Amino acid sequence: MVMLLAVYQKMRYIRKYNEATLKVTKFTSLYDRITKNIERVQKMYTDRKAKLEARATKMKNSASIWLRNNMGLGTSDFNTSIYSYNGLNGYKMGAITEYMQKGQVYNGTTTTDGNGNKVQGTYAAIDDPSIFITAYQNSGGTFKDSEGNWMTKGGTSETFTEEDYKMFNQAKSQADIAYSNAQNQYTTMNQGFQEDVDNWLEAATEEMEAEQDEALSQLSYKQTMYELSKTQAEQEQATAKENKDKYTELAKDAVRDHAPHFGLA
Image 1 (tube, rainbow, N blue to C red):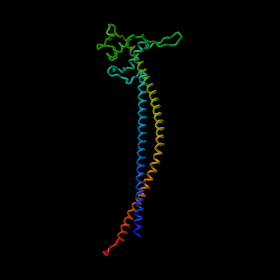
Image 2 (cartoon, rainbow, N blue to C red):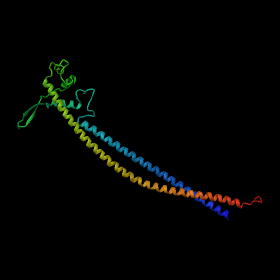
Image 3 (tube, rainbow, N blue to C red):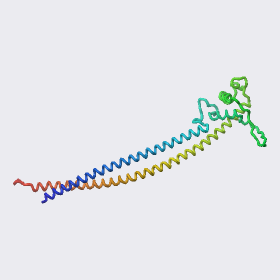
Image 4 (cartoon, rainbow, N blue to C red):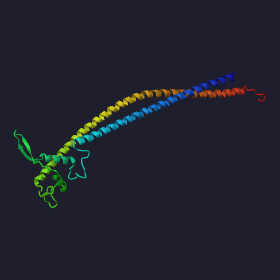
C-alpha cells in the first residue's frame, strides 16, 4: 500500500512539474517577446526624437543663411583673399559703391529745401566707385603712393584730392554704420527665429513623449503581468520538482522494501 501511494504521488508531481514547466516556457516566451516589443518602441521614439532635433537644427541653419543672404551679409562677412584692407568686406564695399553712385555720401553741409526743411548736403555722384576702392586697397587707405603723393585715378593723369579722400572715408563711415545696423538686425531676427524653433521642438518633443508613454504603459503592464505569471510558474515548478524528487526516492525505497529477498536478507 505504501509503495502504491508513493508511486501515485510520484506520478502526480511529475505531471504537476511538466505542467509548471510548460507554463514557465510559455510565460518566459511571452515576457521575452513583450520586452523586445518595448525595446523596439523605445528605439522607434529615440529615432523619431533624433530626427526632430536634426530637423530643428536644419531649420535654424537654413534660416540663418537665408537671413544673412537676404540682408546682403552673405554666409561669410569677409573674403580674405580680396577684401582684407582696413576692415572692408563685401557688404561694406557694396554699400560704399551704392552711396557714391547715387550721390548719397554726406559732405557735412546743410541746406534747406523749398518747404524750409533742413537737408544734409552730399557729394556729387561718382560713376565708377571701383577706382576709389582699388586705390583705397592699394594704398592702405591713404590714396597716396609711397612718396606721399596723391595716386592717379584708374591710370589716368587725374589724381585724387583731399576732397576725394574725405568723400571716400565718409562713404566708408556710412557703410560701417549700415553694416553694424544690419548685423544687429540680423542677430535680433535670427535669435527670434532660433527661439521659435526651440519652442516648436519642445512642443513636438513633449507630444511625442506623451505618445510614447501611452504606448509603453500598455506594454509595460503586460510585461509586469507576464513576469508575475512567469515567477509564479517557476515557484510551482520548483515545488513540483521538490515533491517529485521526494516521492521518487520514497517510491524507490518502497519498491526495495517490498521486493522479495529469496532468503538473502
